[in-house]
Length: 135
Image (cartoon, rainbow, N blue to C red; front, side, top):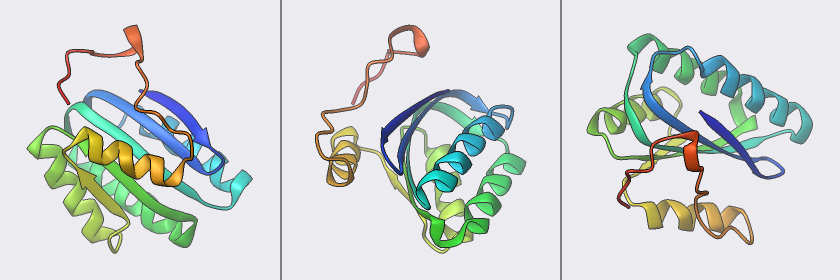
């Protein structure tokens, strides 16, 4: 997982592999720090290389988002896997629509750019994760 601060209140979380919940505390802790500092957060998650998510972790994340109320303004998730699309849909239902999914890279980048002036595109993270992607 790679965390990229885009602007005050905006973070990009890039994840890889199967989400078994082991790294969720790290990203949630960083997002909690952003909320404490800024008063709110918008999260962008590049999950194209996530292969699945543990059901308990999905439920925990949904409860975590919901517990932050209006401070968690919105989550945007880019996915390639239909399993992740389904998980995002379930979390969105749990949170009253506070999470939206995207399957198109350019659409996802446009949403980020609408929030973060000067955003040029998703970062090339080199050896930090898989690069065998197609947009």
